[in-house]
Length: 424
Ligand code: UGA
Image 1 (cartoon, helix red, strand yellow):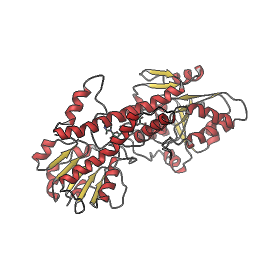
Image 2 (cartoon, rainbow, N blue to C red):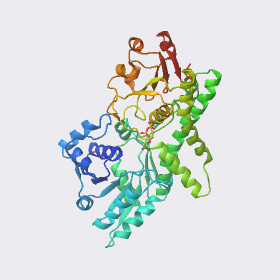
Image 3 (cartoon, rainbow, N blue to C red):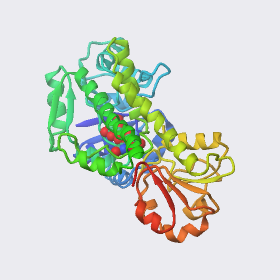
Image 4 (spheres, rainbow, N blue to C red):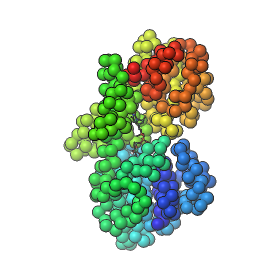
């Protein structure tokens, strides 16, 4: 099948390459010339493990091409995936400007029957809107169907997640479109949930919100564990082994970030409020998440004597989680802003993200002469550091582990004052 992917961000590019792996021909369409040029040359313009190699492979094999020619791209393809951004609008709702633009372009250029698939995370009812936007620009009655097929891949493990999904959700009222979608996904060994577009759209928001809820639950619990001197990691393990609960997304830390959870939880809250059925449980999820970095800052302040204005602090990690160069809604940035408000001197490091020209290139340089280290991102390389060797470089050996990635006993044996998130 000839597949068009509209929007070549990490979801669009990954989706396109996965379909190449399944033997399809794919075109990536984007209005951003920089992105298109870079991808055409086989250069991934964002960091995502394993994807750059796959891009080169399929460019060479001519399975994937990138273009900014909207009309030609729409006319030449049968299945069109909408993978454009849906950022948080000013009212908390998802901003559908890019989805609408793409849908209208399809309406203007549709020449044969097409299946239009929304993969971007969109509010309940968007499939209906997309149908209307396409129709509003059609000059001839050419049939098409709209399908909701949400994506569940994570940044940092996009390829693995997209190749091995837990489930595929296909939301459509059309038998013809459902058959085409099932054909597209026939090589995947996982359950397919077949439903209508609205339920499919809700599944996406509800999944992300539930995962965010798990994180906020363990984070709020960690504060109580702290008070009681209980290791929250043991609690996560103990409850996570119950199959009904499951071990994932129970790692206490500085709170969730990224381009998805904060945006999607807020969007679902917004929808619920508009319908007069508030999801108060999610409102609390958001609040706990906002509080968590501040809770951690207070622990840092208390340990360092109540004032930070004469302290130099090394912040390790800027990305919202390991294996990505994305800093959107990163708890690390919240923490840095707060440290700056407290007039602390800051030195920062990240293995991939470079936000400031004066950023330190090595962990050694970053921690030299500092009063404390704060670990904000769970990069594997921070685990492997020879901490004993680096300790003498510090003014005071305080280490605040916002990801509970180090062993308290080990760090104390090396002579550090170690404080994690209820990590005893
Ligand atoms: C999330 C979902 O996990 C994907 O299924 C979904 O497709 C994606 O959003 C999306 O909607 O596009 P992502 O935002 O890439 O994926 O990253 P996650 O691995 O889910 O992590 C989100 C945040 O939660 C990170 O800040 C992470 O550090 C934090 N987290 C995760 C915790 O604090 N504790 C945990 O136990 C797990």
